[in-house]
Amino acid sequence: MTRVKRGNVARRRRNKILKIAKGFRGSSSTLFRTANQHALKALCASHRDRLQRRRSLRGLWITRINAAVRSQGVKYNDFLFSLRKANMCLNRKVLAQLASRDGDAFRRVVELIHE
Image (cartoon, one colour):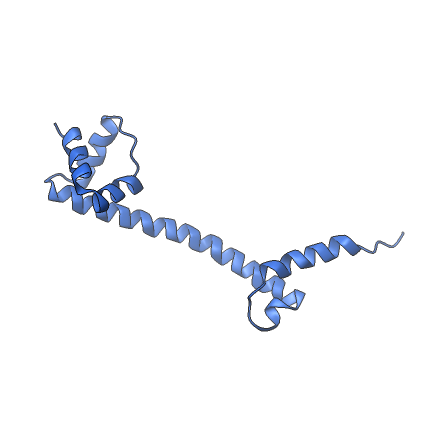
């Protein structure tokens, strides 16, 4: 079998990993083996933490909407049910922003739904 030197392919692969590991401390940013291990661990952690951030933000949005709706005298569950029934396409993120930044607009949304 003939010899394959893998010059460009191997160098590009290693440089891609070292580029990801740039800024890591010690040999984790210069040596390929340790950089590869730490880069894979960092990529797994970043993916996991992105999902956790979305999860925690959703809980925050629900809390904000619930507080704003309760001040109007409506339950959160009833509010969402009537929101879907009225075919209003506002997600929790937008509703939470309305509730925290523009209380008058949120109050109008609640009044529109509960007429």
